[in-house]
Image (cartoon, rainbow, N blue to C red):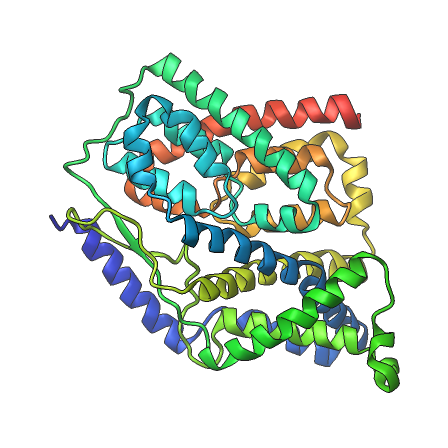
Length: 405
């Protein structure tokens, strides 16, 4: 059964495609960086260093982590719908577990099952509370033990929240009629194909250099006579720029569409409710790594250029306003999408944002899963997001008063 939602999404997608062909807004970021590099020699060095650091300190490890998770996902061939149907009494902890998986795919799957009437509202609260979105890959890549700890905490808080909501409202609260709505999601791989081989070739040396940098080892000496030219810096910069070019699709004019994002196209199909993605595992790794790379670069530049032009030390600012840091982390988490959350996690890894703010953000944020939730079940999405802010504030301020105050 086709609905008005189908037409609206298709029309908006077609309109968006035309706009992207005329003016790909993502290229504005690259244009602004190039202009700034040309006008300010100090900014030039800051931008080169920031892009290089983002690639060698973050992107290469995120790519490795994504390859492991996506590879396991493909090998295990997990049927989420069958799993949920076979263990309905465990839908809340299963939803929390799916939400805690890095990325937004598990959360979107749970939201889809809720729209079909197969899950209760408690499961929605559990999955949105537990999910950390793409920021989880970043945290796991840089601080794996912290990342695992946050995942376990998110599952626990998600389960408690889901069961609490079911106890308060009852299992039938806001349960949807599956006969009236169904969703099938798909994505398009639109990155510049000719850049993919270059991206892939740079990854292995990038991982090696990234590991050496993490161990505080000298890397330029590996390049012999050209060591004085700072080859590590420029290899990282080239890798980061290629990731940004593929993200922006500067040469194709097409919109970048990560597998689970604000740009994901949705259609209504009652006969096939399963989420599908017509992208290879390598394509998923490349596209999602590029997405994370761009936001990490933005986080680095916000800090470095902010200090350069204003003289304000953000780390000192968060120290002065420490009692507000957990609240800020939670409020940023309420913003839809993974971008703001990646920025928060990047600032935490840089020692600027405290752990309390990071935990509050991790629990309150819904990642890209909030977009399909709002599109398919807006009332449930908004209410579930509001509910997720409560445990986020509790955990954030408990951490602040116990460990940081």
